[in-house]
Image 1: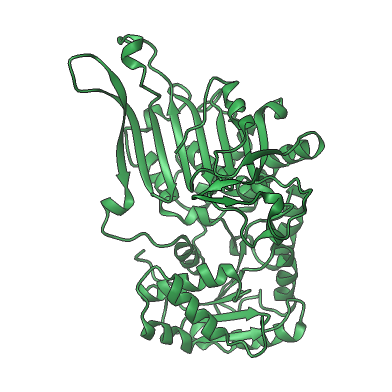
Image 2 (image 1 turned 135 degrees about the horizontal axis):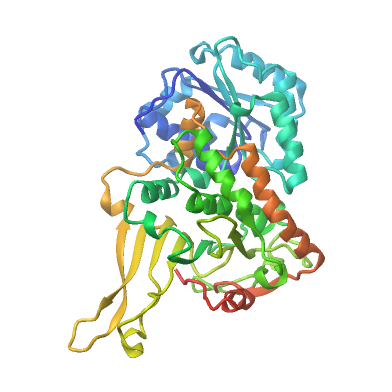
Length: 490
């Protein structure tokens, strides 16, 4: 991260919310601590006070000290604090936005360059964007820029995504809109591109001739916590498959771009997403589940319907698994299995490219009983790295072959520490580099893939239970068993 932002400022709406306190403000501090922010960088917070006399600066100081990735230095914080301002008000409050416009206009050190980060509930996105346009905040002074940063979920279906796109693009130019998928800011996700296109050993087998199938997993070992108001009615498929996992699929399956510009990357990802096809029988090749009470981490945990704030009759999915194909020459006939869930066996996100078996084996069946399939596994979190699984002879006088792993781990291979995803993304926003941000077409293509599945579940499907602490419902295992395959157990 040797790039340094030019004169600029960041306005964070919802500055005292969880995302801002745990991720955004600590990321801004870390960028300052690494020397990647310009002198006079301006941070402006917009929020409603949670209690009388709340001191926003003290709240953010505590958050930065607790959640920063780099060592906390009071002198760095105080330098940031000098250019920190706060505006209190409701998102529909014209007076508050007039005050915000005055604060933004008074920050001489930014030269008029400001990014507006909407760390707010999705239902507030359109309101905030309209207010920014109404009060002239979306219009940059001559020679300056203004940018909008929008968190997921970007809509709850294709129709709402299009409506939101129209609202945002009515206020900001297309290249000034940055839609955040924080997974794309992770080092290991970016390493997919390095793994594929900087090495000659993988490209020859990265196709239907050698790949049997691909599994993309995002498993969490926690429940919904205090997010009942957001999560219920959204579910696992809308929350992470529509964005995170389909973006990982696109990066895994895309062709080599002509360059690493935002336009070239988006073009190749969009080609893949446009080529995704759903199976004819969605009942057989999709599963939605909901965690029931069970044991996790040595303690008894409640089921989803027993969580605070959840309707006892809720049918929201906390687990979703789908099978899709990619209709092009490289991937025709190769299934991609995507799954995501809460209260699963452990926390892990990975992409497993599973290769086919050798066409003719010299070894007897007893020699290869313990041998699985070769696989290239990209671990996105928490143990970032890459594993190549292959067969090797067991030492001894007999010919016995077992699986072994060749492992690359980020924390053991580099002395440099990986920046937190939001560090990279905020810096890219300030630099105007949109390479890691999904474009309008990508967002709409992802909803085009998921919408038929959601409609099928609404009209025909049932939500099946699975005990907390397991790897999901048995129906998901059956889904792969029909194809003669099984899920990996990371």
